[in-house]
Image (cartoon, rainbow, N blue to C red; front, side, top):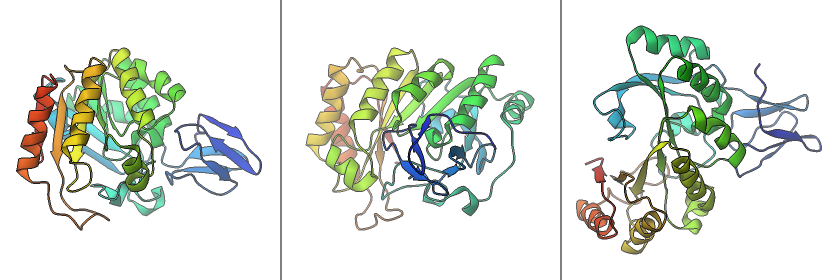
Length: 287
């Protein structure tokens, strides 16, 4: 098995240092993401080389509307996520351990060869949280970069600085999902925190990665004028007015079914707020 990166020995196990959770994982146990296990005092990514989903998608589906538009990408995912969003759209693969999902055996080289054989110009690490299978993504991205292919990250952006910095030289574009401009919502409904996500977006932008931001407006939770204002103000204050913003419609899923879909009027109002803050490109998604 491939050994994980970013961990240190800790008592009867290890401390994972891949994401801000910094899970203390005892011998034989796994972290919050369900896919990294401590064995013999070392940490192993159990989903390495075992993607659960492979598809060919328009790049706009990521959504990336302003990076190689009109082209197709190889979409790839393994099981695992370090968030636990109650409205998760892909809970059948993100909220389960690797053994609970069907998977394929594909080495990083085989993934790149698929793209080259079928003339696909990019690879998207998507559907679940790619940072929970960092080693597999990194190894593919390095090989892809060497073959002139583009790498696309679709993520919640919840990762520590060191693994992010090591990956960024090989990433060409990213869509980062900001769950809410409210740390309490992050903690209660997603099992994470807001600050690292915002910091990582700025780090990606500074590294020259093409960034687009998604904000899923969940009915009655994060869809208030106040929170949309807060997001757009943060973007404007940090020089991100030229970053495309995707305001997406929520539909009841997984453990959050008590509310109906986001009203179209809410999305239109949010778009108007974004424009008033100088956000130059605003897309309404899932409508």
